[in-house]
Image 1 (cartoon, rainbow over the protein chains, first blue to last red):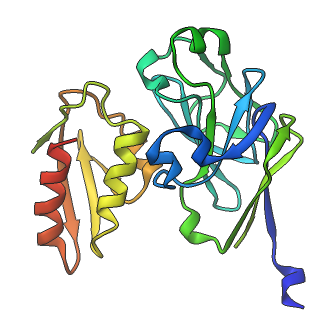
Image 2 (tube, each protein chain N blue to C red; image 1 turned 135 degrees about the vertical axis):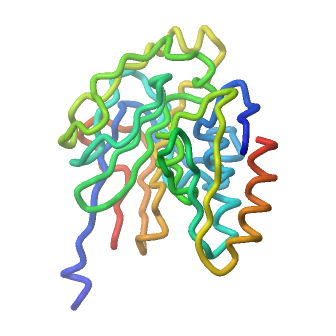
Amino acid sequence: MFKLFKKKIKLVAPLTGEAKPLTAVGDAVFANNLVGKGLAIVPTSGHVLSPIKGKIIQISSTLHAYGILSDDGVEILIHCGIDTVELKGEGFISHVAVGDLVNSGDPIATMDLDFIQSQNKGIITPIVITNHDNFTTLDMTYGSTIKGDSTIIEIEK
Amino acid sequence: MITIKSKLGIHARPASLIVAEAKNYNCEIFIIKDGNEYNAKSIINIMSMEAKFGDQLELKTVGEDADEALEKMTAFMQEL
């Protein structure tokens, strides 16, 4: 009965591609949920959208990592590619600034997938809930994703 | 005083390691950079600090195991 009133928070895919478990990232820090719980998308296009309505709370100076705080209090980190901190911003365009309010599906960044791969960096992009301790359930949906449309993570408070 | 030795500064990976270590303590742990305080138990908060190679940081701990946390976290962060 009470379950009916429990609010489910939904994250949509920020990228078009294939959603996989974090173990597919090939990086122990992500695979062991040290950054947070979530999944990773192997993108087929480099347009990164906001997975939820909220506020941009962090952008790396190297433009490869974005922190979003949703209106429901979910803290999300989108880490575009792996070891991409070493590219020092090259291959990334940011479309937002810290403090910006975003809706689900608003553009956040663009990744130049060909360039990133030419530098031998991974394009697989972890999307993790960094404050997952505050929530009871996180359900992941793996498989092909369409940006701004496919639900990838459902969260219950 | 802690000096950042990592050439890439404190990005997602080292930030995650700091949080994992900080969560071993019950006290509140803050990293201080340029007079601003950042919560050592929040990855995004630490990343927003944008600590770079050569930057100098200080720690502040508040709570029951504050002394132990200060000593061990300082040693841990110096090796990042």
